[in-house]
Length: 160
Image (cartoon, rainbow, N blue to C red; front, side, top):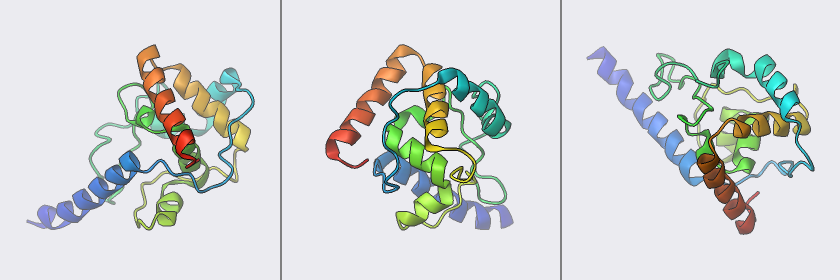
């Protein structure tokens, strides 16, 4: 019974968070401008230094990443083709990385700490772009095409 009391609010919060991510492509950071070029090799090194401890050396994420932990946070999702990273446009991925989950969600009126820290004080915008380019480079062609189309649609709406 005690599990049920906590699992319902956590599940609702996780569902709201997932819904928001799936429907929101808005970038309100203002610095998510596209990089002129990407350094995928640097992105791989930066990923290893800053992301792999949570998201996995092979971008595999943490076990049971769709199920909130006891603290209500979702484990780090995979960034390979099995995860949901590729479902989102570049602007959202950039903002989420730069600001962190709680801050970005708070700007959208959602109070939820996903556990994702912000890297604005650790990584330059270019380095964030390089990490994201590295992640994209690991996806199969079809997934890269789908994600690129979502990014293009986001840009055409002027929401980035």
